[in-house]
Image (cartoon, rainbow, N blue to C red; front, side, top):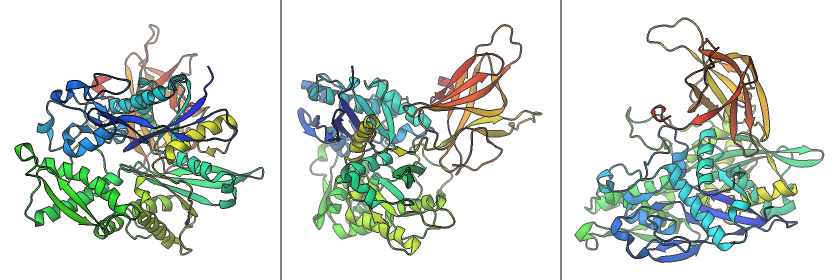
Length: 600
């Protein structure tokens, strides 16, 4: 059955949004889906966003169907607004940041590791934790159910669905997102789209044909997306083809875990100092609770026409739940100065973010950016993608909830403008509400695929490499040198494949063969077959391994079978790597191994 709607899903770190439009229209009319959700125990209301939080209640809280939804009874968890507000009162029972965990290869993302609350482990020993993949699945299941309730005659599984991911997500993180989406009931052929590109598509929807008068050949658009948990940077160039302006994604930044959550924490640190000055020392539970309470304070104080002060309260525990509550007022201007100067400091184009840690030991957890100066990260990204010292940015498109604050947009434009001496780049206005732009853009993208609307050319946002162990004499205690073979070039288009030129590679047969896997957003000129003898971690990052077990045939006496590689980027934007025998017609697809070796 042909799809009637295209549905754009922004599976966000902090909030998730669904937008849609009918495929039959001559012009896309994009709408938002109101999402029913628990806003308090036993109370369901519709909201335009689904907060990407999951609350895991204690058994005594489940009585009386307190967590029932219109489409589900007997639920033992809650996602959405109730879960978000529970983060302040019960952080040890609240899952947040699941999306950031999906791209953290140092942990097993299929294992139940969330909520991750260092210092509160004793508070949460009875909680049935969930994995980052399962948490993402639960959010998507809720969105699917909300759609099917609103449109029972056109279920989501039969529609064209576009799900957005950060441009910096590597192939393994995309595969895990796809796994969660399929388990949640999305159609097999749903499409992945990079979030900064979706923001540009939303701007195209808002401006219509006027965008051709606002941009010209040679312009470069910086998409700066700062959300709750991440900063995502992308450059889009303007070119001309057969007399028509075209858009081309030319660079993407690294996955930066710095955003609104860091700002909340910085504000919480300052408020804790103010409490301490009053003789109030917060315990570990109250400190985590304060972090969540500061989120609301930040949003209130930075809003247009925000109040000059805001009261922040932290509850006590147990019998002192009411009497132990402590409160104080914070000043708007102090908060503005703290966040503007701390996260958007003045810097030069040659400044670089600090990478050094203060200790050789670090708790296992999300790899948050060591430097929260977003302007320095932007400087490094712009400089890395400048030619002949020319500052390429002519326009900036803002996205993400952080940039709802006008003073933060103005500061970033001011800093970028100081790099060239030619004045601030132009801000591309048009995305009226930054909370919904990505979902709206995803819906438009799906419509444009069907109707031939404006498309951003881009292909893969990274180059991909396989580690090849060199042959030669073995040395006791020393591994053989490793080389990196480029198997996918930067910008390889969806729906294409290529044979990777190389000498035959020996593939282990009869047992699991482990392939070390690397990717790079910086090396944009490497071609399939290029072999790197050395590299540094800044230009080439190791990610999840690939593995396959190749059964040995009885007549095969050698431990290795000579193969060559063939790469493919599917129409869905997923990467496949095939081993092709050089002796016969056999071929094997290498699968991502996102589990520890002992579980493979």
